[in-house]
Length: 569
Image (cartoon, rainbow, N blue to C red; front, side, top):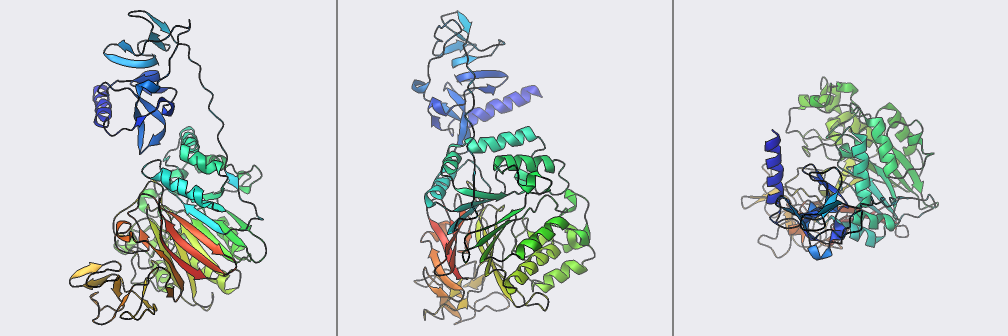
């Protein structure tokens, strides 16, 4: 078994040799372990003769790099002699020192003479801290993001965030990928994030933050109340985000939920961060014993806290959740496989109450997996709007590895009032994408005119079929502008003559105005302009114009505003 593992490890390094970046020695870790030996410098072990090291921060997803030998400094022994550059031992060449075949670091100082090295263990630089948001701030720009990985175009995306100077950044979960019960490992993952060069630029910019978590920084994949280290994990989360010691989450509160009302009178933004992990019931039987009608997403105490928050007046409420809120239940599965199904009565009643009996959404994790809890959340928000406690509610979420703009019209109710329209930005993530079709009937509508009359009042019926092809969004086929059908038959075929040009950038639409539609849309989505799933990274922006009383919701990539819409409040 050991021989097999050694062979696999060796083969892995050799197979990746051509993919690793070329680096300056300053980018190397001061020391690293490889095949049972410590290295203070570099080695060519299993790398076809080239010197390599493990990196302080990953580059393009690679944790190691090929080192330019002219950048490697001199190393000295305990008597002040210079180490040979390189030292050659048993077919291996290394610059600096190694513990191979010895208990302490050593190097050659002559043809056959060697000495132990003088190694000064460097003290790690103090970690930079997150900045807290002031209640006196006026929030004009809120950035939202999740699912942080040090790969792909993450550096460019983070750099763009910093250049846009948001008044607040909301981290919505999977802030690291730990998936562990080892708190030392989890702390190291958090600290590694803070030591990442691009994240240090973010911290140095003093952009205020608020945060919640999701499964990979809470515990493990799709986990909830049965994760055994949730209290300990909470402490690591609070430490990472530099939460003050007098915060309730340090003083008896279970769960990382939090809220703050920010801004002067008439310009108040109420930021509410939900914890959809700490109290969450199993959604499928492989995550624990099913609880049927008693399934919960937030737990009793957090629900009461949320009700109290929604009763507080503010102009805008931004509600953050690690998982998506608005997509309806995926009905490609047998409903009885969902833990919350119970005897089916309350489960199906919740769907019917929201007019979603025939809708089917994403097959990935979302609030819809516990329909009773999702209906409860949406009805509470509807009542907050109808009671005049706020003028607009926008959910923000992560988890999925794509960016998306969504809208839900909550049906009128005797108990909760008239129909209410709420929105969601899903922004996920940095260095990640998911270039596959995602089913979601509650994606933000695309509006079209009527046969080119430039009055964009009709909703595109998506998906639609034209000439035997199914389209998930607008198409330019047989037209000089993007268009869609505005009516379809029972088979999804477009009704002849019922078509329109899709609303372009700046067009007036029933809910406000189209912001931007990228000219590169074909390279950003698998079909629908409000689903950005082919870009290397994505994050969201909320731009609030307090004078015009508008909110622009956008999905951003590492180099452009991909798509946006403007609503009035």
